[in-house]
Image (cartoon, rainbow, N blue to C red; front, side, top):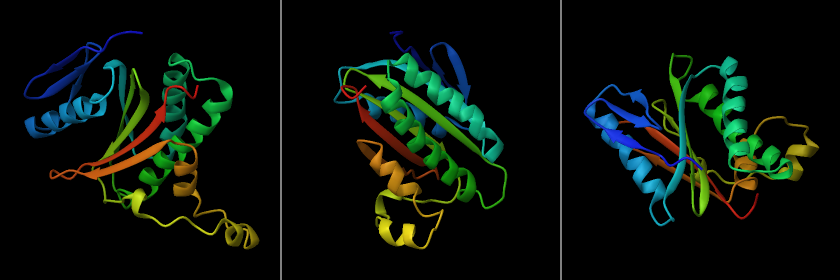
Length: 184
């Protein structure tokens, strides 16, 4: 595994020597907090990748490629790979469809591996939505009525070990999907 190298200044963070530019010092410090909090309580962050995508449905294939590559680098096997990809696809699709209300926006994904777990943090600055507060749907009723929507949050919960959501004071939505490493 490649060790992460974090460099912080007033306007960027570097992930594995690739600078990621932010709009303000406050946003950069918020991102440092994400990285440090995400690795707290673990054996340390061993790998991190970051990528930003336009918040458009056309970005989903690129998001899929980024996530699949990261999971494969972490040694995730096919059985668990498909389920994890589905959880990320649902999370990204919901952000793309609902966060920006047809306005331009972006979705930044931090993919992190530590000694204990694998985490993806999906960050956007659109409308807040906490999927952890949503009641699970009646699956039988959805199937009986042949509804094709309303399963996204259910699938995210079903195929992750833990989901966390935070709305930061500066208006960022942070959705964290967590998987234990022993489930490769």
